[in-house]
Image 1 (tube, rainbow, N blue to C red):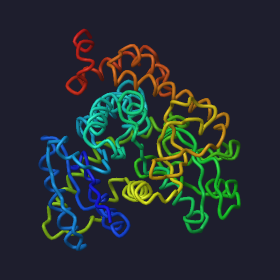
Image 2: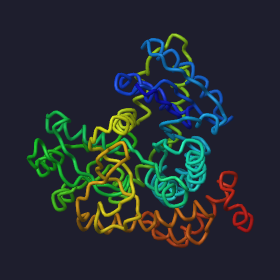
Image 3: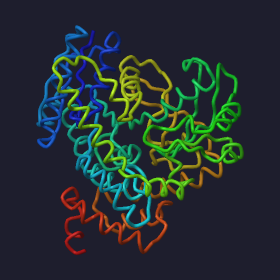
Length: 440
């Protein structure tokens, strides 16, 4: 049997034990023989803690998997089959700035949406492009499985501005929503087909089939009958969407749509919170790494659930396993549109259902994204294309043009001032904007 090498870039992430648990569970079908951990010097302590925990987890499972750790990315990429990226340029402190600075201007402060998501993209995209180019040179047949947010923009940047097209953007949102729908309907998730259309964190469930029977309307009625949003993610408010919204559109939005459809309420919630989500996560991670450091710990701790990221390893390993086995399973991933959604640009990256094969994801054409959702998604894709260009090339005009037409930018004057302040705050992470920042 072929032996596989998995490279994890950003291995000091608190999510890594979840990924390792997935490797252990799937080892009977996925013969990974070497896991190479990669991080930067700043993440040395955390990566070493994860490295030691991983060795204990693998030893308990009795699996003959070698584990290595390095700061030398190019060495780690040698003979790689799959590369998972889960990095955070600037660490959790940069996330906190992404959340707090926009809020000070009266804008939503969130790590993947609005100004915060935009600056996460600016910091992240050049790094991921470098990784993709190195893979093309060192391990050209390997697949890049990107979990780093904002997933659709990062994936689009690789496809448009790197030499490598073997990339799949991944989010645990769709798989969580699918499992939540199965729970609402009290059915086996294996018997469900849930159709997604849109962009990452800007997507909608457009159809739910149970053994071929359309149960979309029934699911909406169940959702509307509840007092809280039963499909909400851990890091997003569980306040319900307006019941008439779902009934009128026959669509089920991702929780992240609350930042666009319930902006007033979400701003009020952020203003009332003592800590930003990033500050909460920073505290959670401090406790997690204390737990990870316990030399008697041999499993993923239950406390990791508080961090979010449920079904993270399931989503990642499902994709890797499907490519390796050529099992042609249907999964929801971020890919080049190519006509899958007929009323969005072909070169835009979309989050849609795909058939997974040894040749990668094959998007399923499901026609148009319905109005009025189409207008919102189309607007976001135009915004994302501008920000991807800005991140990859250092184009300040694209940055301004993109953000001012983001639905979460409620004032052009405040928007420009916020962009300038966030450029200054992120100076050390944005070398492509160095000259512009100096002139501000």
